[in-house]
Length: 260
Image (cartoon, rainbow, N blue to C red; front, side, top):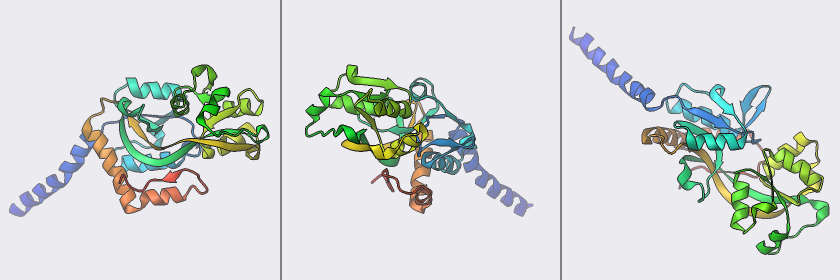
């Protein structure tokens, strides 16, 4: 009898952390946008570095959710949803000072440089940020691209705002905008989708380089944010993050192996 009671106590002590973990991490509304190669669909399945990593983070944090629960939306809808709906997680989000107070943050996932990209035959050269004032730019509405341009004093009447980089590239190719604002990895992917030769484009100016993270609604409880951040940190410390990153070769984006 004493052995049976002792065994029961041991079993209960083992189960207690699992129950607490399940209570601490309720199902989240997880939304994303198409941003290849970081998150994209292939044969009906959501893939990419950010997707693979979040899948592992949720598992490590004790969640039953998987990539099957991630919902792909246009950027502006996903961005607004993460600000207005509690327990919403949005990825992947460029973490800027302008956005810092809008979300709770888990990351970083990686570091990404954002460029002004033009057609090579335009031979555009930016020697001073003031040179930007005479051009038109293809942007994504409420995207970090617009934040970076505003920092340089660019007015919104110089923006041509679209929902997708693919549309911006088509407009760039047609001469309807002078430059687009995006990362080089995204340009390569979207040029292929648009049927354009990426070799006809060039980087004119690096406008920013920022960490990219998962963003959660401001009212997300501390224990949820901590559970997700701890899981991400553990994956980096144990090498799982590095293994995921190595699956995606030739990227300009840079891995971030720790928060230090």
